[in-house]
Structure formats: structure tokens, C-alpha cells
Length: 508
Image (cartoon, rainbow, N blue to C red; front, side):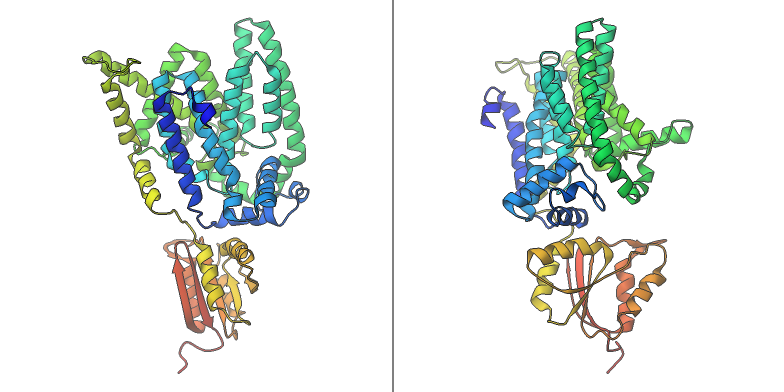
């Protein structure tokens, strides 16, 4: 990494190293896997490279990412750190690539400013250590931008290579490739640069063939096998803008985008500055604006076809585009302030003390929440569902003939950590019933007569129609009437209870 940064300005290096340190700290905290991560980990660990191409239910990612994760397991073992190794490399590499890409669109000092923001964003730090593909999606998007901006039209074979390969490693890569490809096609056409036009058409044909092969062999299989996931995210699909209500959806979606994954403390004001930045780019360089926004537009179109959700972590790969436009808007505001007030210049590069103050204020005002989170997680590890502690507690307390009942969402985590700790248990898999509590009650009635049975919970849902009551509370209330509680243990996001259901809770 040092060789990549040796010609980089001092403050840019500080911004990049800050991002690296924050990501390494998150990684080395080695937090317990939560529901989705545990399901993903079991999927990878329990299958061969070939079997990973045959089924993508209950998880969904590209075959390339599956194979990378399997490679990490083969080399380093199935630990949390092994499974998070490639997301970490992606997160660290993304910080460097973002600075390089930002430098194409904005001035050097604004590129440094935007890199500081990119480095501290809590969502990007978190996903750089999650056993999912989103950090890798971001890395691939930035790598495509970097190579296209650097090598088109000088070296089309590098562009063909990255496009053909990236489609197999990242689903959103097709949005970035198609957006940049179409932008360069129209730019070459309107500028009557026929040599570049022929090159970009040739490149896109090969990209398209790779996407077609990927779709027919893996993407289609994944979509067919994960209709439940598509239904779950149905609220996040963009509507066709036909009414005022539809337009309101788009406004709310972008405000939510500014909150997650962009972590803006003032999302609406931040969105206004993004629009200011976009208008400045429209006036100064329409090609740059089109390069930044075309993948976003294509993502919205795909979302309207109910294929790709426009929400949260699915949009991590679009963070650079909006962040660069925000930085351009801040640059415009900063230059306006400079013109309106006297300036005292300092430093060999002509930077002003006032510029540092203005940029620092924007970071503090618009990202104070993420700054507080970063400081907090430097001293306290982030934990969402500490299933590892639950399994360790069970291992220390259980007896040979004990049964374990798994609340359906606790199953992946319990199985992963049981396997990690070499623990074998007689497990009863609980049903998933979001509609009728009576089905839960009937499921528990079957357990009557069990002398020692442990009930494990994590990622607990609220009872439908009763927001203040969780399904865990319903279970425990029912179990307290059925038998006698012998033990319980609670930790962050997970819990375990031991009951004797052969003995009434009212028995002497």
C-alpha cells in the first residue's frame, strides 16, 4: 500500500490511513456472526466449490464471491476472521480507489475532503467486516471506475477484462458497466469520435456476452431460488413515477439513502448539497455528471422492474457517486465564502486556513453521528447478536440428554457456533409463524414432558399487530405456564432459557 501512496499528498495519506485503521479495528474486534452472516457462513463451509454453483437458497450472491469466501475457508479455516478476510481487503482497497476516482471529478483538495468522509462512514466500516458481499460490490464498482477513467480508450483489453470478470463477482457491477458504457457511447457519438465509438461498442458487446452467460448459469438460478427474499424487499422496489405518491416515494428513498448507507446527520440538507454539486457538474462538465449518475439511473430502472431493491446495503456501491457530488457542492459553497470574505493564504500549495475550517465544519455538522459512532467503536466492540456467548454458556451448563429448541432465526448462529466449538446437541427446529401465535403454542405443546430443554433466541421479531411485544416474550409467557424455568442467560441480541416441562410451574 505504501508504494501506491508514496506520491500522494500528505493529507490524502492521513485520510486513507484513517480509513484503514478504522476498518482494521472493526475487523480485529472479531464480533459474533449475526443471523445473515451465520447462514452465509454455513452455506459456504458445508459445500464444495462445485456445489456452490448449484444452489443459492437461502443466501444469494455471485458465484465469484462464493468462491472467494470458500477459498478463504480452505486456506484459513472457517473462523469469523477468515470469512471476513476478503470483505476487509475490499474495504481497505476501496478507500485508496475512492481517492483516485474522486480526483478525476473534483479538485485535489476536495478529493481529500471527500476521502476523509469516505474513510469515517460508519456503514462502510461495518460492511468491511461483514460476511456478505456488499463491501466487495463497492470495491468492484470503484475498480471499474478507476480502470475505465484511466485506460479508455488507450487500452481496451484491460477494460474488457475487468468487465467480463467483475460481472461474475458482483451483481451491481452490471449497473456500473452499463452506465459507464452507455455514457461513453453517447459521448463518442455526439462528439463524432468514431474510433472511440467503435471501441466502446466492441467492449460492451463482450461485457454483454459475459452478463448473458452469468445470467443463464447463476443469476437466473438465484432469482428463482430466492423469491421469498424478493417478496420480503417488495416495499423497496421503485414505482413507475405516475402520481404524486410515486414521486413522494422517490424523495423518501433518496432521503433514506442519505441516512443509510451515507450516514448523514442532516439527510435533507445533505441531499440539497448533493443537488447543488450535480448542478455545478452539469454546468462545468456534463460527461462527468453522466458518468456519476448513469449507474444510479439504471439501478432505479432495474428496481422499478422488481429485480433490485433500492434501499440500504444494496446501494453501498453508489455511495462514491453521491459523496463526490456532495463534495462538489461543498466546494462550491467554500469558494463562494472565500470570494465573499478576505482570505489569508498559507502553505506551499496555496490552501487557506479558512478552507480547512470550512471543510472541517461540514464534516462535523453533516457527519457528527458517524464520528460519535467511530469513537465509540474504537473503545467498545460492536455486537449485534452475540450467539457465540450463548453457545458457550450452553456448553458449560448442559447435560448429556438435554434437548435444544431453536427459535427459527437463532438456528444459523447456534449451528455455526456449535460446529466451531465442537458441540453436538439434540436440536428441535422451531417453526416460523408470523401470522398465528396459535401455531407457536401448538409447537410448544408438543414439548410437554421434556425434563430439560433449552430454548435459544436471537433476531427476535415483534408479535404481528402488537409492536411492543416480542415473540420471545410470547414464548416465555407460554413456557412459564407449561413448566418450571431452571436457568436463563442473556447477552446482546441473544438469550437462552432452560425449562423443565415435565413439572408444572405451580407444583410444590
